[in-house]
Image 1 (cartoon, rainbow, N blue to C red):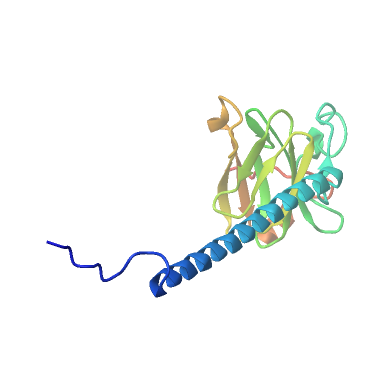
Image 2 (tube, rainbow, N blue to C red):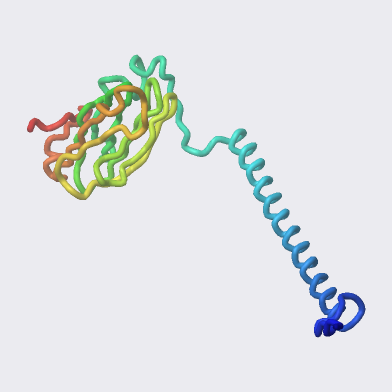
Length: 201
């Protein structure tokens, strides 16, 4: 018995063979276009990485401040007598602090509510960091560099300020306190040239 001829017909010359060849050519052309697109994207990303790497190596970001950690406690902005909260001559509130294994200095910081407060800090030995309660006050402290940011506290009361960068075996015990006072009470306690400490409980 002879098998019935296939309705599709053999590949090769003919209408169906030509349609298949055209579809294959379209698919290959589309794949080639995508290869070029993906290669261009990868090339652009690599060029951006090289450019930014070389650019930032030659030009550090603005507002980078450095300090000498070997003389930090002897002279300059971060001597012990200058740490804490101060009201500057222009009325701005500034907090200066140092992180070291495994404590912050000062251990307790007093700030006013609803007033912009500028934090300036550094570390003496390892990378540290802190976050104040559930506020947006959050930064890293790197030895040799000064971290600066400005924030406001909207809720009075006491908040914890733990170190959030692992810094050694005593890391879990490294924390300080931040007491947020009503603006009027803070200004009544502030004295020109003095650094404020925590209010007795």
